[in-house]
Amino acid sequence: MNVATEALKQSTLYASSIQGGNIDYDKFRYDLEKSYPNVFKDRHVAKEFVGLKNASLGSSDSTEISAFGLAREMYLKTTISYTKPANANLQCPNVAAHLYKAIISRVALLNSSREIAQLYGDTLQWRAISKESQGEKMKWLLAGKHNLQLGSSLGDFAAVENAATEIVLANGGSQTITFYTELPWSFFTGKFQSDNGMKTSALSNYRFLETCRVLVETAPAHEVVTGTSTTDITNLKIDKCELMVNYDIPSSSDMMEIEKQYDLSTPLSCLVGNEVLTESNVTSTSSGDLTHSVKIFNSNLTKGFLVVVHKQRAATRALALGAAITAGTSNGTDVIGGGTYNDEVGSHVIRPHMSNYHSLSGTDDSRFGQDYKKVSSLSIKSSGRVLFEAKTYEQLLFCTSSMTNWVGLAPGANTEVSQMADKNSCNGVNFYWIPFCENGFSNSFTGGLALKGLSTVDVEVTFPTITGNTYVVKVYSIHHTILSVDANTGRIIQSVSS
Image (tube, rainbow, N blue to C red):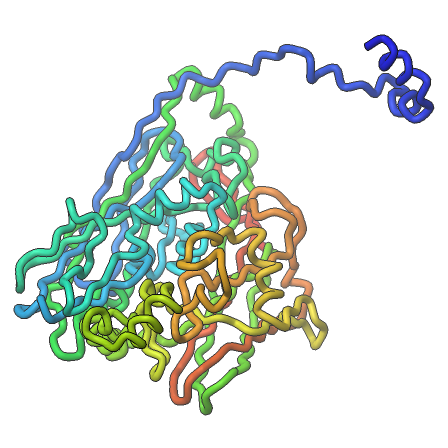
């Protein structure tokens, strides 16, 4: 030991590195962290959306957030039900994938009737599949019923995932499904949110803030559950929808210390995030790759763009897919035990991943929630100058996958690209995140694209199509914004976002 120690002292390089006392002794010093405030964890505090109860889908309602302490997590608990056809053993309902987001058109956070933040169904799915922890990700996906198993006439397994709780009832009976939707507001802890939700708790202190409400706008009924083109389901409704909040409730003395950050003379400002949707429809005039451009007109300081493409979600197409699910032709289960040997080998040995997807190749129809198209190229330009360009799907993966952690989620996601997609090159993870920042946290500046300083921004995508179909190209601008809290009134106002 002495030989090695004395030898190191003879090193010019080592002697230079420790000049000025540049030695890290802290690694060997015991340092007790400061104690945490006296906090009670109050979980699953519920407020019901009265207007959504027994209402048809495609509606909206809001409910007030309970004024407890500091909100740390927020989610929706939703129960839907519908009546199965009388000949249900021959009719399989078509239930959307990622049901937790399929029912959501938009969710907004309101303070004093002013909208301060919003989330869309697409971005809810993107954030769910992007979680770093595999366990945390699957917790929300399983609770959200992200892939309910759909059966065929060979076995009535429609809308069953946990058979102990969601058993299929008799023909003509009522099917009930309960699922949970996380509301990942930017000031809560999480990827694409805050790196520490406690530090942005000023925006979740509902004891201090003026009345805050959550507004839920639900999607059309056919985007959630349909029957078949022969027999549709009936009585589809939301039985109950509740806003659930997990709170930190500090002791009175600790809350007073926390609230000392509020100064009556100046508003308290927090850097958070929000999102803006720009979408454009295009109809394919010939089968094959279609290139379409979307102009972005907002002027926000954008962290990045989230791009998705899917076929327009029409009720007639959902019913047609329901008929194919019933027949087993959507995923090849029709040939099990009843097809030729070559049929069975082709469907379930060579392409086993296809049994996880429901799609119709001739009409380019895929199960909603798994109908996001594979994009073969994408570019972002301003006044003709290229800001980003990926000429292949693989180049998009290089940019996207470092932040969108979908690996291991899609059937066959760890194998070949072709095994991640259904017959239409669609799946539930084709989200293209183009970052102009170093990390995804919304409460820190690590780069961004100032749209205010650009004359025009065009997002151009190329994707496969079939003649006569209409497709929706969506571009979400995920941007920074500063929200200020007026200490006199508890009102939240948006200070700047550009």
